[in-house]
Image (cartoon, rainbow, N blue to C red; front, side):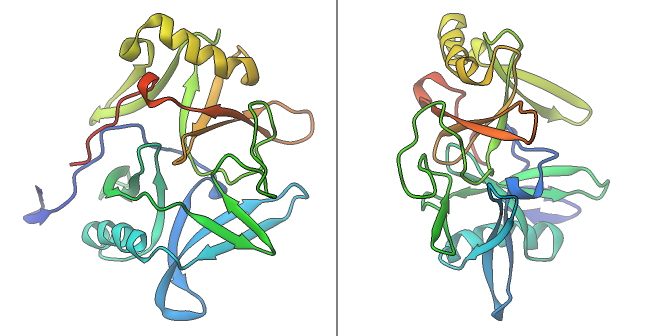
Length: 240
């Protein structure tokens, strides 16, 4: 519990890896149900291989919707908006503060898998293609794009993320300082073997799937890289 403006708040700012400047297809959203204006749904925007944009929703996660809206209503006075789920199943909710700066709050944990049905296809962050076939490292990632971004350091020997421990300060957290240089080099090397040693952003979703954008002459392509091992990964940051 924290005090803000004389009001006792149930949530405090999350001090872990948080997304920033993400595209519309890289987040989940709680919104009103257009078929029933008294209820809510979770929405996902998906860009298909043939350049269609699918707007799909699910109403099968009322507990998750309530978690997100509790943060939104308490901190803004209104429901609805975007959220993310990280590899530790923590639900991360962005809120703009009074200065117009986005801060992130943890609504708790949610373990039920999100799946969206659209025209006979099931969209999910699980390591399968749209026909349900298991993916192998190096396969095209055609799944949804919500995920938490990390950076493969140039040279492909380490991984880091950046966060703000306090106002006007940013800090890089390197995997090598968490699990050791040699272990970090091995983990980073597996990612670099598919993404390339020049480094750059890649993403980890709530299923622990690693996927990364790959340079292409024609359009942005994504590759499936594999699954994280939590024994050789960044530690879980406590939700307070």
